[in-house]
Length: 456
Image 1 (cartoon, rainbow, N blue to C red):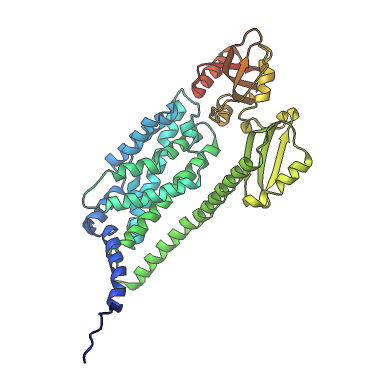
Image 2: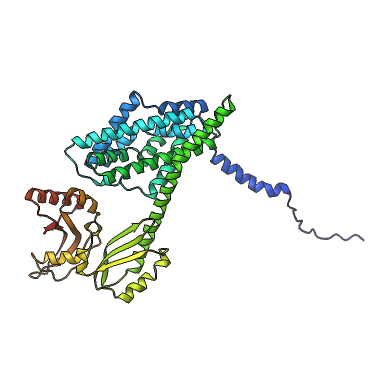
């Protein structure tokens, strides 16, 4: 007798083809989405275009000079729109990309051409901006200008990412609005104008900081250009004489090392400084949460030898045991070896440099009592700009200052008034004209309807 059994579910055996199907699909998806070869322009056309834009003669040089003048005016009057317009006009990206292309394709002549024209462009830019800031009647260092004197790690990231986007856009068949955006983001023009301002006013720290920022931008745009050109596998230049080819490669390598090695060291310093400042900010915010004590000024100093956190406190003074306990938490914020310097009490005011002070509310109370008696006071949440660097340049007689919002409850009525107090201690007496100028300037910077200025 034949007995028919129920069908059992069959197990599908995995085969090498099934195992490879999913990874192959992923590879196909990503290779299609991120394929830079799809709309790539003709290689010879790309090289010709970049080489042509690397040379500063005729219209390119005149355009650069006019762009520098526009950018200098924008920095001088603190106009962001004017500065952006100048960056859109600037042709400075050309020689930088030319250097990167020359390095990637083993074209030493293009590297020399790009380097020579970048040097020419830099000199003409600095000379033009120096002449402008020398003859202009406005010599105040505005916030847009001051922002170009202290490079940070973010400038490195912006220059690198911007350079990648820029060279990708240059190598496309259809040109887009990427290049203008890269010109704005990487900001090659303002540092050169700031360097000219530093020379015109004899401020060499401004000059060095601005030139360093320009150097960072140039270097990382060049590196990103090199990486994309190699990724796209552009043909390298070959020489009939093998020894000549080796010599050219050696020259390029030496030039690259001379340029990159110092920048790596400097960029590493920027990274370490940024990490220290971020950790110090977190430490201050996390460890100084006291009901009757507030941090009104903080300064972080970083160098290869010393790391210091300098704080000014007002309110109830912390005991020695409390300070030691706080210091023991430095390691929790990766701040081992950092020095914590705490100044508290009214006597600390005489020891703190004015550039460290943002707002001393207690000082505002004592100064305000000469005109009206305050019975209650609270600090508002409005944030004010740090104007210490600008004050140092514009009004060098100011030794210290404080800026805060206060609420007064009048004795003769229940009405509450909220006013902004700006008080300044002077190292020398100000005349009426200079006092009026400072009053007008602080009102425009703070942008408040009710401001009381107290000067002693």
